Length: 435
Image (cartoon, rainbow, N blue to C red; front, side, top):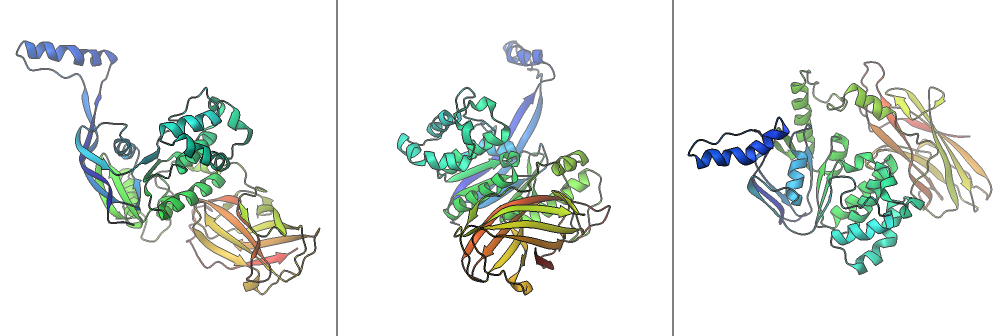
């Protein structure tokens, strides 16, 4: 991170005029002028709403800053002012370098154009030259991973496909400043993981990131620093963990709830019961194998989660979980090896792992055409209301090169077990069973 300031916000305010009826807008355009011409005090036919009020902020080059706050706090207004899509009422914004922003799905897309045509259109709008687009086109298409839909009009796309295409173009801009306003929340678990990896790569290359999310885990994973806004005012600016604690206390106090004792895990304070239910009704992840690396001598071909004896993607805190995986051997693996499982947040923050070698087990040499069944078992220690992913790995020989490592092979959501709260642990006992 550089000491150079990439974004400087000084005494920034934004006021909107709120009209109760459409005709009041016309009155405001005409009648005050008549009153002033007659030497009388001009009336107003609107109410003022200050979305931001006297906000000052410096963000350095290469810094990742999370912006949090309740709905209506001013987060999106701030981002639009930084991007230049809104004009401030008072104050100023200075940004150094090229900005890439995901503020609204489909912004810059023509709904009648195909995905292919919109890549060229959106890239041109964002400043990519024809040569840059030609060199990056295949990579953009591979990242978006929307298959045959690339040559279909984007008006037929789902919201998830929209964000895939939009983020793929933005990621290849090599921006100086990347701004994301909750856009990735519509993507599936596997695409989100890929996006967060791309964001980290951009951060490593010096890109400044502003990230708006209601997910505390996501903000903590990506952003060392966070800013809390409430009713248009800057409440706190500091380390992400401290700001998020303040955010939770603020939300609890506003809703009339009692704040939890320190170090007590809690569900997302902004999630209503209906929102929590929706978070549990995600598409099934079982048997879904995503990005992988390795020599390819063997491949994981299945990963299924079992809880209470049934295949599931929703598990309870404190319950026993069994992960069933299948390893298909394509070429001889002539040495003893090891298998492992890592449970991570969807952003890729590793929480705990289970490894056959450290459990005193070894995978015997395997011959082409064989299939090795594996069961990983552990008791779920994770906090409720969140989603997690499972990565699988097979190395041969032991502690050697990966034969196959699969990222986001499966995923699951954790729900509470009655009123019981289970603390988040990072040293989880587990075992591997060779079937």
